[in-house]
Length: 141
Image (cartoon, rainbow, N blue to C red; front, side, top):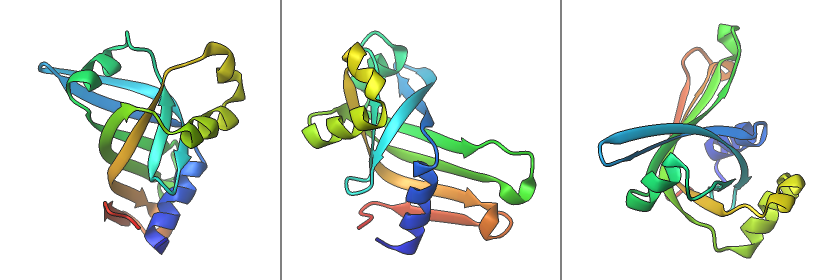
Protein backbone atom coordinates (compact mmCIF):
# COMPACT_ATOMS: atom_id res chain seq x y z
CA UNK A 1 0.00 0.00 0.00
CA UNK A 2 1.42 3.40 -0.90
CA UNK A 3 2.10 5.93 1.87
CA UNK A 4 -0.63 8.36 0.76
CA UNK A 5 -3.24 5.60 0.86
CA UNK A 6 -1.92 4.55 4.27
CA UNK A 7 -2.49 8.12 5.58
CA UNK A 8 -6.04 8.09 4.22
CA UNK A 9 -6.82 4.65 5.68
CA UNK A 10 -5.41 5.70 9.07
CA UNK A 11 -7.70 8.75 9.06
CA UNK A 12 -10.73 6.66 8.04
CA UNK A 13 -10.08 4.16 10.82
CA UNK A 14 -9.96 6.96 13.42
CA UNK A 15 -13.59 7.80 12.65
CA UNK A 16 -16.87 5.93 12.25
CA UNK A 17 -19.40 8.32 10.65
CA UNK A 18 -19.45 9.55 7.06
CA UNK A 19 -21.67 12.04 5.27
CA UNK A 20 -23.15 10.70 2.04
CA UNK A 21 -24.53 12.73 -0.86
CA UNK A 22 -26.83 11.20 -3.49
CA UNK A 23 -28.66 12.50 -6.54
CA UNK A 24 -31.58 11.22 -8.63
CA UNK A 25 -34.56 12.73 -10.44
CA UNK A 26 -33.17 16.27 -9.99
CA UNK A 27 -33.20 15.82 -6.19
CA UNK A 28 -30.20 15.90 -3.85
CA UNK A 29 -29.99 14.12 -0.51
CA UNK A 30 -27.40 14.07 2.25
CA UNK A 31 -27.27 11.76 5.25
CA UNK A 32 -24.85 10.49 7.88
CA UNK A 33 -24.04 6.79 8.18
CA UNK A 34 -21.96 4.67 10.55
CA UNK A 35 -19.37 2.71 8.61
CA UNK A 36 -16.83 -0.06 8.71
CA UNK A 37 -13.94 0.19 6.26
CA UNK A 38 -12.13 -2.57 4.44
CA UNK A 39 -8.72 -1.47 3.19
CA UNK A 40 -8.24 -4.50 0.90
CA UNK A 41 -11.45 -3.70 -0.98
CA UNK A 42 -11.01 0.07 -0.44
CA UNK A 43 -14.69 0.08 0.46
CA UNK A 44 -17.04 1.28 3.18
CA UNK A 45 -19.76 -0.96 4.55
CA UNK A 46 -22.90 0.81 5.78
CA UNK A 47 -26.40 -0.14 6.92
CA UNK A 48 -29.53 1.53 5.62
CA UNK A 49 -33.22 0.87 4.94
CA UNK A 50 -34.83 0.72 1.52
CA UNK A 51 -37.32 3.41 2.47
CA UNK A 52 -34.71 6.16 2.95
CA UNK A 53 -34.31 8.93 0.39
CA UNK A 54 -30.64 8.12 -0.18
CA UNK A 55 -31.34 4.44 -0.93
CA UNK A 56 -34.18 5.39 -3.28
CA UNK A 57 -31.68 7.65 -5.07
CA UNK A 58 -29.02 4.94 -5.17
CA UNK A 59 -31.42 2.46 -6.75
CA UNK A 60 -31.69 4.93 -9.65
CA UNK A 61 -28.14 6.34 -9.58
CA UNK A 62 -25.44 4.40 -7.69
CA UNK A 63 -22.83 7.18 -8.02
CA UNK A 64 -22.23 8.89 -4.68
CA UNK A 65 -19.97 11.42 -2.99
CA UNK A 66 -19.16 11.78 0.66
CA UNK A 67 -16.99 13.23 3.37
CA UNK A 68 -15.44 12.41 6.71
CA UNK A 69 -14.19 15.30 8.80
CA UNK A 70 -12.33 15.96 12.02
CA UNK A 71 -14.14 18.77 13.81
CA UNK A 72 -11.64 21.27 15.17
CA UNK A 73 -11.25 25.02 15.43
CA UNK A 74 -7.45 24.70 15.38
CA UNK A 75 -6.39 25.48 11.80
CA UNK A 76 -3.18 23.47 12.06
CA UNK A 77 -5.13 20.31 12.95
CA UNK A 78 -7.76 20.46 10.18
CA UNK A 79 -8.26 17.12 8.45
CA UNK A 80 -10.98 16.04 6.09
CA UNK A 81 -11.64 13.48 3.42
CA UNK A 82 -13.79 13.74 0.33
CA UNK A 83 -14.56 10.63 -1.69
CA UNK A 84 -16.55 9.41 -4.67
CA UNK A 85 -17.63 5.92 -5.50
CA UNK A 86 -20.44 3.54 -6.32
CA UNK A 87 -23.03 2.22 -3.89
CA UNK A 88 -24.39 -1.33 -4.14
CA UNK A 89 -26.06 -4.03 -2.10
CA UNK A 90 -23.45 -5.92 -0.07
CA UNK A 91 -23.02 -9.57 -1.00
CA UNK A 92 -19.55 -10.32 0.45
CA UNK A 93 -19.88 -12.35 3.67
CA UNK A 94 -16.47 -11.21 4.93
CA UNK A 95 -17.52 -7.56 4.67
CA UNK A 96 -20.77 -8.36 6.51
CA UNK A 97 -18.70 -9.90 9.30
CA UNK A 98 -16.51 -6.78 9.38
CA UNK A 99 -19.56 -4.54 9.85
CA UNK A 100 -20.99 -6.64 12.68
CA UNK A 101 -17.59 -6.91 14.33
CA UNK A 102 -17.39 -3.10 14.26
CA UNK A 103 -21.01 -2.62 15.39
CA UNK A 104 -22.05 -5.82 17.22
CA UNK A 105 -25.28 -4.27 18.55
CA UNK A 106 -26.46 -3.87 14.92
CA UNK A 107 -26.96 -7.64 14.69
CA UNK A 108 -30.12 -7.30 16.78
CA UNK A 109 -31.63 -5.02 14.12
CA UNK A 110 -30.78 -7.30 11.15
CA UNK A 111 -30.00 -4.31 8.93
CA UNK A 112 -29.63 -4.35 5.18
CA UNK A 113 -25.94 -3.80 4.38
CA UNK A 114 -24.47 -1.88 1.47
CA UNK A 115 -21.01 -1.40 0.00
CA UNK A 116 -19.46 1.85 -1.17
CA UNK A 117 -16.62 1.03 -3.58
CA UNK A 118 -14.28 4.02 -3.61
CA UNK A 119 -13.01 5.44 -6.90
CA UNK A 120 -11.52 8.76 -5.70
CA UNK A 121 -10.12 10.27 -2.51
CA UNK A 122 -9.13 13.86 -1.75
CA UNK A 123 -7.73 14.42 1.72
CA UNK A 124 -6.86 17.75 3.27
CA UNK A 125 -4.40 17.38 6.15
CA UNK A 126 -2.97 20.52 7.71
CA UNK A 127 -0.79 18.31 9.94
CA UNK A 128 1.30 17.75 6.80
CA UNK A 129 1.43 21.48 6.01
CA UNK A 130 -1.17 24.18 5.56
CA UNK A 131 -3.66 23.20 2.86
CA UNK A 132 -1.81 19.97 2.02
CA UNK A 133 -3.92 17.78 -0.28
CA UNK A 134 -3.59 14.11 -1.12
CA UNK A 135 -5.50 13.04 -4.23
CA UNK A 136 -5.80 9.38 -5.23
CA UNK A 137 -7.83 7.68 -7.96
CA UNK A 138 -8.61 3.99 -8.44
CA UNK A 139 -6.96 1.61 -8.90
CA UNK A 140 -5.30 2.23 -5.52
CA UNK A 141 -3.23 -0.93 -5.14
